[in-house]
Image (cartoon, rainbow, N blue to C red):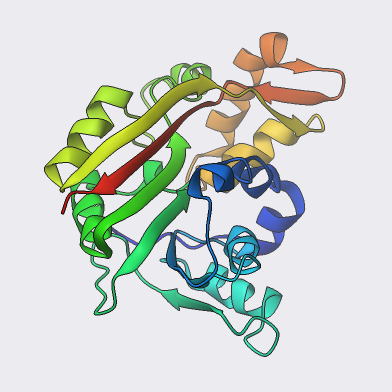
Length: 240
């Protein structure tokens, strides 16, 4: 998988919903003091730091150099002694010290091939260790995808059954899963354009405008856009 870098300033200023919504996933993770936890696709480190506050030892990894640089700036080692960040691709990641849990928020729909990432994350877990993830599920941003027409997007939005099968083939047994609508508000008349620039940066301006014109009547109201997010939240354990 080719690494994607990010405009971190724009990400932190206008896309805080990514980690704010992800806080609900921490209840499924239920981190404990003394555990070793891998945050797979940590971004700028906001949720990694919240996990570390519980007393767990956390390694946050991301394939984007800008995100890792910002995470280290946001949460310096001098203050967060049980939190580290490293540059890594989820399809090639290896470790010699297994983790008690793998956590991932809003990342796995970017990762191809998903089967390889599942294998690598399973291999990073101790026997009986847990995998907790949330990302775009089947039907996520369906109206945006329809408006894009023939223009390709990089995302992988699986159903519960599809992703459950991927986890099982990697040696992870799904124990809990839910696919749910999560309408997501982005503020300002330019909110959808900003979203498209952030997540589909190669899209021509004329295509962005076409998407905006198609969707504005149904998705823009009261000074903002409501995007048709659907999330897949899933928990699994590594089979001994």
